[in-house]
Length: 375
Image 1 (tube, rainbow, N blue to C red):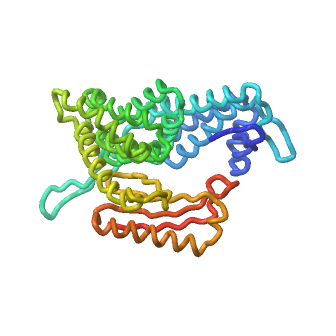
Image 2 (cartoon, rainbow, N blue to C red; image 1 turned 90 degrees about the vertical axis):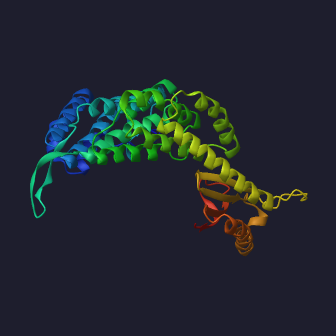
Image 3 (spheres, helix red, strand yellow; image 1 turned 90 degrees about the horizontal axis):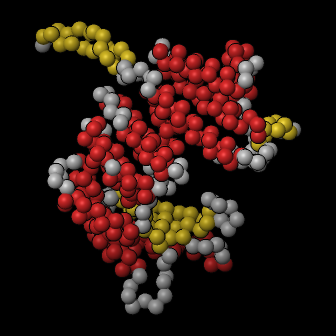
């Protein structure tokens, strides 16, 4: 969500009109931005009390739009295309305040969500006899995922490390007794810590988990620790990553009680990455033999996980990249070299890719081809 000058903007009332939510339009259209925000918040909480997951999730989306309206209303202008952001003075500050408030709203609402619902459980009374009875069950899973995603998005994107630590602390203290909710939290964290997640933040959050475990238990923390370890690996240069692991190891040896799952995960991840790096060095040596006076290949090695490698060659667009047949031939040679190495280490999943980025269109390619070498 990046609101910029000239971007079209659809206020909540117009979104409701397009969705034909006429009752909502009638309720909200004559209210100010603050009153509208309060009204939608009440509707959201009413839906959660009824355990109406679909309606609660919808109301939460409306609530976020009401937050946007509250902060951006003064920056809107009318054009033939409709409403657009047309004021620059103070927009950056308003935009930053907006995303902070969205996350703060989500954190506040989480504490108001019901912790359980009512489901049916089968009770076995004899080998051939059982009956159903009411029991506690997870509830509002779609809504909870939407709320938590808003928190995780701000945790990932904020430049304020103190804010990031507070939001991570909030995420970690969620330790539901329901497996469905623990998987939900794990999924949200995994998606938030994908490519581009700040490496330093992943490291700091990873190492903070020992204290969290003492206070909150470890059913979910071990999963989050592993997710952060993978993020650490994915978003770091391999050489830097191994140096960081090496720096952390002495701290682990000094720990009086080395049974913390996150520390076990750290050791395991460090050992597996070191082993992977050593195996990739064999491939690197094959592509760049020491007696070669020039570099034939322009390859970058990426490590999405401790058992996966991406071998990516990127060629700059130019005269030498206009021959598509030649590019296919070059890809075939690279793939065969990697395949020969992969036959030696079949336990590693490998992606081979050749790409030529477009000169003027970021994120687009004039040529791209890839092939996965499975384990």
